[in-house]
Length: 123
Image (cartoon, rainbow, N blue to C red):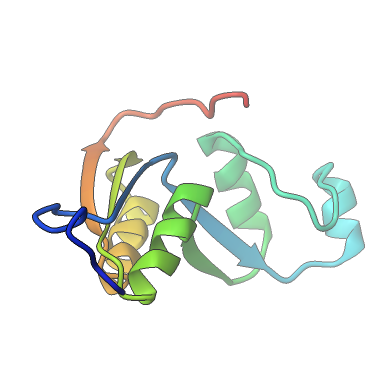
């Protein structure tokens, strides 16, 4: 990344504040989607109870860090920029996945890991 005098001495090129989200991708058929009132090709924020229900009903899947801020910062980091992320993540398996993936992206993190359950916020 090209640096000029205006970026000299700054710790980061870009800092993002956002929701730390873990995407869970599983293979399913249309009947599974219909049984759980899910829309094909969509994304849904769900609470812990619904997540556990879907995990128990579906087969193995792939878990990866997501969220618009984190994904943008990942791209900046992969292009050589110095990216930092500020967010909150639960102290559990999915939170650990987000932390591990973010370290692979070489993002500098300022995360508060919490052991309390917080309901998803409506957009």
